Image (tube, rainbow, N blue to C red; front, side, top):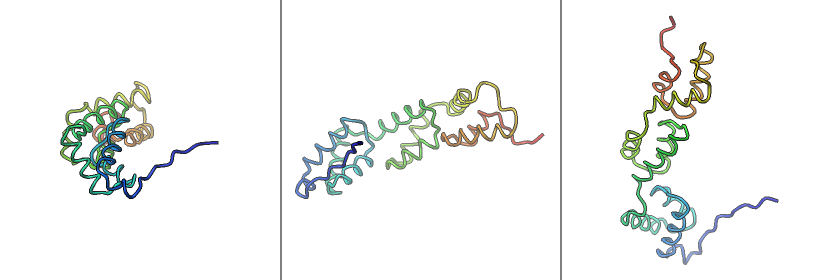
Length: 164
């Protein structure tokens, strides 16, 4: 028998209580770091008033408990270490509601993406470069799924555009 967690919604009286919303936000932040938009959405999904959730997130940001810049830098470092490319990381961070400038700055301060794509390819497929186009395409699809751009993939697979 499997047990599932049910999401607890708050009563209508607590939904408009800023102290209760702040306590819920702090409890969520105690488990892991959140982006501001992600935390705001999480509070709204728990039943808190959207204006109260936005005010709590603004207060926590002002107090530097919640920091989108720190979150983006940590997210990029962690996911690049797991072998994800910049395109996948960008899509994830945009879904959390982070601004493009913040995402671009975190990615620029990050890794050498071409070297990372090459390392991921070598770990998965071995040190020998792909012998034929079918193998190059297979490896390129894998790297594309991981979130690397076509430039990074060409650098990793040694694929050139001329068919000579």
